[in-house]
Image (cartoon, rainbow, N blue to C red; front, side, top):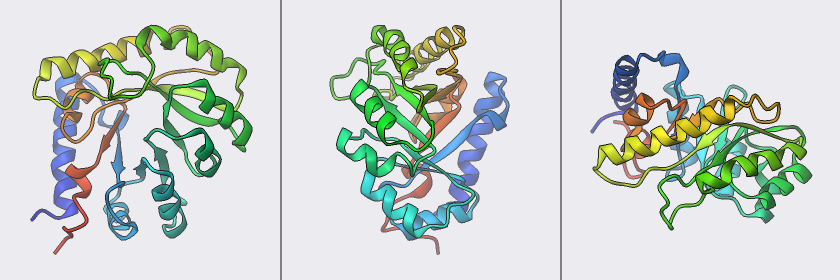
Length: 231
């Protein structure tokens, strides 16, 4: 069984290879370790191998880890959908929110946040009914509306590709998100610099990096499962 360190080394090799293929700098890609399925203890082990960005998709999981893990040098990412009533619980505990896709959430952030929050707007590029996010043709109007919320800074866009072996389809979705990001970034909006791309998970992050991802969300391929553990 691979140790966490060995897994991270394999992931680093794949990230570097993807950067080399696409002419990118490795320093421009952030690995967000998705720890939603593992304990606080396992998360601490992930941090000890050098990971500084931690992703959670449930408020209770985020709050538990924030309370038990020293976090002076960490960035906390909330990567799941959040109900309006739970915004108050998490918004001052995170460095990045990856799932902004409706004004009801924006209004709660505006009301509850102590300082501006870096947000990714989630886009449902694939059009799957099971996935959250704005439709691409809704994106620009939504971001323009966010200009009135000074507690929100749109740093980039987020999407999820279908779970499929069709690499051409995955690449098309990631490329489409990059195109949307580029169009928005070109507008140079103060409240929405929109320079980042959160896309790619355990099964498709090399493709995402080749297509411009700045943040890849890696769960099982890195942290494993709770029943595992390093020897």
